[in-house]
Image 1 (tube, one colour):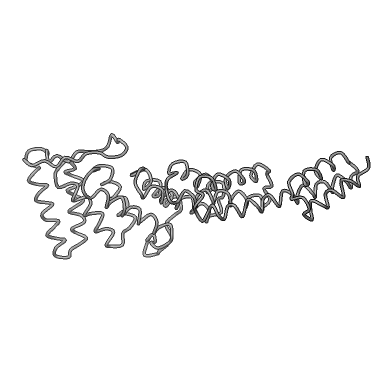
Image 2: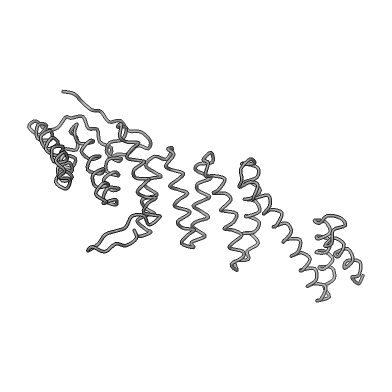
Length: 302
């Protein structure tokens, strides 16, 4: 009997099955008959019945040699019928059970396409004839499955980036920052890594602008943009990061000058002198702010 061994690739999974064609005596012929019937139904355009027939082969005879092809055809026909979420779930069943087949990469890519479409609102959830967006919790789970199904494949960093971007669009900045950071940690060689780092820096700055004036956020943003310029120096994100670093430096100097003025008005002259000296140290000699700080410092009571 011809066998069709399906080997596992990627992470090991106790649920991975081997479709060897070794089914119980008397059932091998049954699985082949149902599979042939499904193909005949599909050829006649009777898609719904074909989907059910393919499902029967995959569900009732999971170890048969027809099972992998049946599961993938079930998923493909559901997708063609517009049943994207059900299709995603059947692709997941195929990926979990039948890794290493020639259709495995295709299934991974199709799952990725469905998850991204769901995130962008291009596919809807149908209930009682009403259409609504896919719940964000469902989309989040889909992206995580896409990422983890092929953690070393090209769909993984795209899924992680989309996950972080979804959180960013939902104004969940804390989760978005962690999501972009995870992309860089997991996939530092991805073409998306520079953009992920850039967004981390910008989101940290946004948190300071929105009222969370934690000095640590500003320092972390500064470090993030600096890392970006060092790790990915030839990217457009690095160029933008250098400009932002100059702005951060300028705002820090202006802030130091303002603090010095505050202490001067409070007649806390040693503290005022400290910050005026900080401005002098961090500005170009002869610049307007540098000269102002020197003049104010010189005028402080001794």
